[in-house]
Length: 420
Image (cartoon, rainbow, N blue to C red; front, side, top):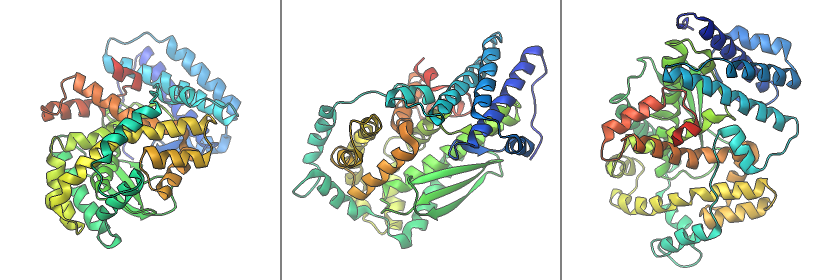
């Protein structure tokens, strides 16, 4: 791994440097107790080896985190915005680490408490009537008779990518997303990722970032994959989503500035709301207006053996069902807070998220594994969209939207900072 640059040494920068190094080692230490916690690490191998040798106790980790927080609070705020953001970022990431420690030690947070403590965001509440209104609007759009969830599932079966065409469709989607992204964002010339198809996972796709702008992207094939998931996953996991996000942080913050805290990614932290929110919103950034429908009509539908003339019809329905994404949060909230059992949570997802029963079971499995993490997808996307649009990055100004998006994924901004 190439040596990372560092900023000029001053008493304050040295304190920040020490705080950053301790933060990285604390994240690695928590990872020894929580195998999902360290999503990526590409810092010095010696630091990881040091932690594995010493294995600090949870109480030692807590004490060290509290000391770093106290020191960060005593460092004067910089006049440079990105340095102020860095200080806030380290502070909030450490606070989230402490909350995760409490969970590992047995504290049970409510869904809303956990979301705020880990992800720096307060998820909204949507009553059942909200989803009933959306479903009422869908009734006349989905063909067939009977329960809406069954009609919707039957309709979508006509848009499944068959296994023998899956790789061709995904490779075409990735090429388009990459080309669109590279036109607007300067990526390292050696950036790349490998694509794998896997089974028996609670998620539909995952990006494992390896450092040096290299990722492993895995696609779960347990359940049928619909045509819309090709661009969704190619953009979300790849371009301009997680692969690009991690590459930008590594290039601009870890390497150019020598900020070592960006060599580690703590999954259960505020960083994840930014990561998932930009990955989801990045789909709209890459395909403004009707460009996605046109691309899929001309390229992906034929590659999947589907009738491209039905692309607009499919997406008119798909777009409206997207409003139902917050049903996932309500199912997670009620299930984790004890207001629903597993079966009731699955039934809620079938009714209000229009999921097939097997997909609802997979989603509850995801909630079991990752709990309030579900807010990062929908709330994260909405907060990122609001932030970028408030700064002029609207759909009718794609270049400005790309500019704001690029700046966001190259900075240490927090979820709470998206509201300002």
